[in-house]
Image 1 (tube, rainbow, N blue to C red):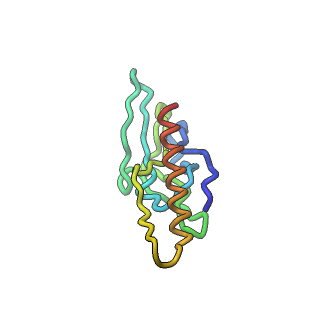
Image 2: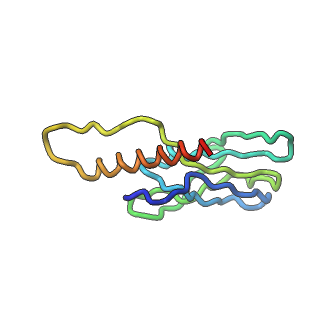
Image 3: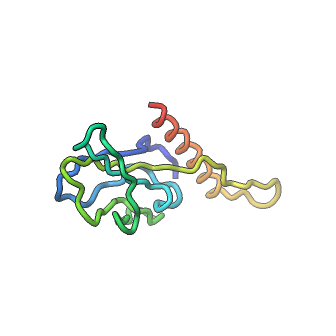
Length: 129
């Protein structure tokens, strides 16, 4: 997959009724590890953010492509109308490809490594903004 999508995160308004929110960031390898979900409570000043836990606060649902990555964060309880839902991709800043000088060239592994590098650059760019 070529990582042409520039989206790293999405911010949605809670309304007390909606439980499903789209994941707009491209998933590179493992959505359960890459996707982070926060609830930003704007009813207090300053707003507070709480990291949500997969399996108890939300589940990942939907299967959009051949990689079977998820497309939706489904909350067990709808976020309140004073909440912002923040869904973002967070990759560990590590190099995972171990290229060797002999043997076959594993195109799929190299493509994933390039996607991870571009994803990390996008992530750092988002943080810098």
